[in-house]
Image (cartoon, rainbow, N blue to C red; front, side, top):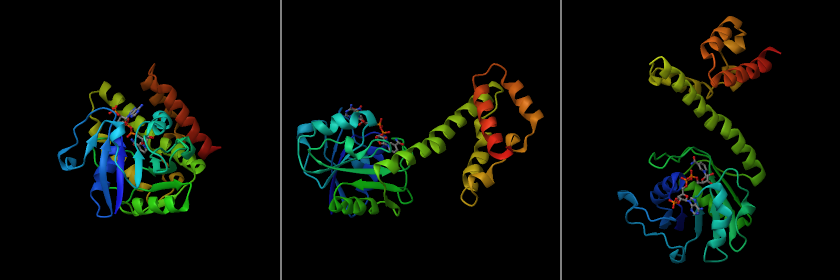
Length: 252
Ligand SMILES: NC(=O)c1ccc[n+]([C@@H]2O[C@H](COP(=O)([O-])OP(=O)(O)OC[C@H]3O[C@@H](n4cnc5c(N)ncnc54)[C@H](OP(=O)(O)O)[C@@H]3O)[C@@H](O)[C@H]2O)c1
């Protein structure tokens, strides 16, 4: 049984806590959060503290707080020579304070606090300085996921960059679409089957094979009409840049 302390109960901390509490191979022995919070009913039996000096003994400590706070926070931990990992896609393992053994436990998925996800298909990217710690992180990862991979800090940076395009930028496109529809009192619901099929399609096709639309077809009149509809909208620039990028890829 692996004893885990979760440090930070935000989007990923709460999701990891739920997943790790649900397996027989791991035990969440404590949750720490900077400010006092109430754990949800199903996790009420887990001891909670907001006092850093009361952090319990564990096999691994998972820091799940914003990227910019990880280094300073890891330096405030009141113990040495323990395995301390963070969950960030973009922070190097070496950013952790050197008084503890360093590692990374990065689940490549998008997490929101009150939206629990199934970890079984989520890739978990692990990294550690020592082989025994890597083994421990693999066991920890495999207790909740079928997909645990060793990834270096350098490669994780690239993965995170790619993830920003497919997740954060695509999601912002949803926001733009919702905003455009609002102007005509049309519901975003109408687009949901299209969104689902766009994501579904790349299970069997490459993104290049799946690309459709006026820019790829070079339907200039349609593009002109769209630009006219956008008039002075701030989204006009986004439309122009995306259209140019697609044309460059497929027509040049
Ligand atoms: N969310 C995702 O989709 C996702 C996916 C993969 C990886 N990650 C990584 O996971 C980590 C956490 O992301 P998140 O989205 O879960 O963040 P988050 O929800 O914003 O994190 C909130 C938690 O961080 C604590 N916190 C904030 N600033 C702090 C500080 N200066 N010192 C100590 N604790 C502090 C908060 O404490 P209070 O309650 O006291 O404010 C709270 O416990 C990041 O490294 C992120 O890159 C996130």
